[in-house]
Image (cartoon, rainbow, N blue to C red; front, side, top):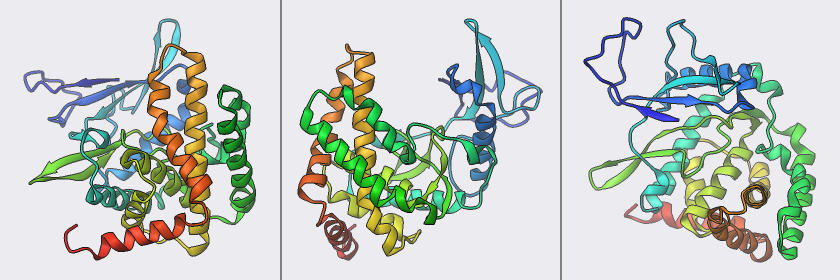
Length: 320
């Protein structure tokens, strides 16, 4: 991926309007490049969102009028796309404030409300290991965990997620979700003396799932970034100020959060077995394990009340 700056002195008759902040050239890996129907679905989704007051990377057509091409690079076929560059800093680059957490919730709800009206046939069959529906497959990767207590913890979570959530999956309404709303995909910009959420990037994990999965995934990352479980309540307050969640779905939320934390931690440990010299992967997981153990061992029965109390305290304080 490369950020390409716009040079006004270069005249290309095929480009009728310019993005002054430049473009991002994305070259997909060989495996993802085989899923051209999903690439096309992503492009159509981004074009749809760009008309719904959601700032996201809009695809740019190439000389043949297509939104991607397949090029031979080092003997392999790779999908190549050009997207508009979205300016700003990433959420992980700025101080985490309660107001920013609330805004992140609002922006995701706004995104999900827009996505509710989008459909594409590619999403009917699209499946990945990172969807929450794939949590049972984590059992195949538990060998990567050296700590037996952590392994037992993840086994408990997988079993609970299967029995409490996946067992009722047929009763939950599905729609397209972002699927990876985290601190590295949320764009913020400084306005006056504070940061505002202004955009979202990376739609490579979009999939068709229940909305409560979207919320569980996002809350996991927000709490890891804020380094405390209570912060999830502020994010949840922002989300539900725009998008309602039924009491039944709220009952599933803590299991979705735990499942995503376990998913991220187990797959991170697996990645480390493939690249044992990269200790950064394990370092970044430390906070995740702390939160997961707090949630599952200490707070499972009280976490809903904690989120509700934290949200109420934030909403009733005079200075947000």
